[in-house]
Length: 629
Image (cartoon, rainbow, N blue to C red; front, top):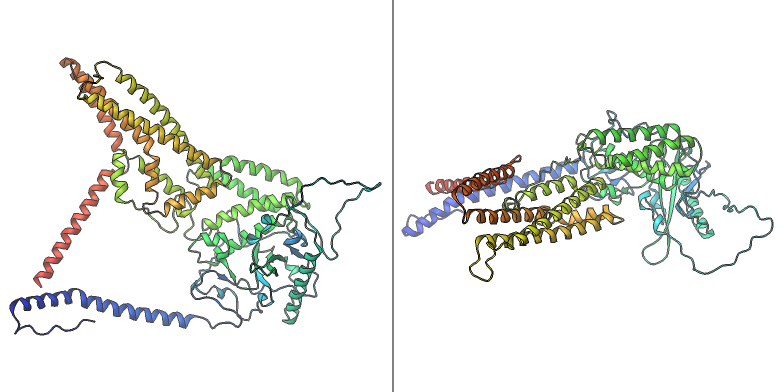
């Protein structure tokens, strides 16, 4: 709030001048700031009132946090199975127990071609994704105690390994024993995963049966009668121990729709619990969310291959995906395909061999096919498939991010002969939108490793030449001071060559450890994220990686200087003229190579200084106008 300044007519001249300056400052700063504050407050009040008016009334039994993007209630028409129907239940604890193989159709999505028109629906208010679920939806299944929604990605299959005692056992096979089949629990059908263990514990079956009875009773009490089995819908249960230390058994669940190729729940599900949605920002359409649910569907089929039937149509669909990806990777150097052409050809050969096992119940083929589809569908989600902002180039940013370089790299790059700019561009392309492709990262590591090996070899040759040059009697004057210019230049060349060798060997060793690591993709992502979030981003890493090349070049320049000094000393005019002419041509060629590029770094620095000078000149003019008022 600006207060009026008292009249200064009867005050001394210095005080009146001070009050005049205060009036000028009030008109220049305080009044506009007050008006801007009032305008911002009015706009905020209108926006809040409009959002509150547009929000739908809360539904009973459902609480969604304000401005939450991660809660999803999907497809209210999907109703839990009727207790009157014979529905087989899949349970994680029994290694894919139960569901009969389903034939996947999925007419609403093609993994290769463009998305069908009319399928993309923008979420106008991302803070209320509960609008996905129509009004009049059935009660939430999580109202049953100890039951909660989960997802295939949240299964702990590979962390539930049982242990045994390492001791020698004596076993005797009875006479005539020729059947070693496992006995299944009554009402259950055992399916063993191709790589999984078989679990047969009576207490687990009893607990799962109790939860199933509660679910059926819940649907019967709410009169939710439908034939989900006819629509190819399975219920999957996952029994886990509570994390509060009580040892209580909890039951996670999700439904699988084999026709739509999605998973869904009869509860609000937080999408941030899934790694894909947690890593990617800007998901604003229902079609994009459906791709995430399709990713979970294929992961479910990979965990429970007996739930899917390998058909000729499914094999043909996967073959078409592989052929397109192979052609895209071969014809486009900046393709978004994450696999190499060699790996894709091996996948295609493997898929071709599945044709003989089509229409048969072989869980091995179903598991591998589901893994391939899960992998390709995951890439569709990362690249915003079917969206207007879809990533069509691996270096493209869907968020419109344009890297900006600091003054540090602009000053150091000319000193290091612009080598850091090349490495900086490579890191920015590999880490576009904070996504790392293992193929691109491996190619970058192999390229850098090969480059450093060559630079180390060249630096070793230069080091030998420096030592031999010092052995010339006219160059090394022994213990007599002062040292000549040629000696000093050779000393600089020796130090630069040794620095290039040491740094190159160290970086080669570091990259070799990263490349040979089992989880090199995760390590690469953490390594790049650590540098990306630092103050200077990838600039410090680019400067470090360019040191072997820059030190080698500066060592070569120092050796050239020492050689020219020796040539120009104690030589006749004709020799000096010939050496000078040759040196001029060579130095001109070196300067020409240094100046090549889309934009000179020196010009960037001059532009920055010019903008600073214009800004300073504008401030001076603004101050002059204020003083005149």
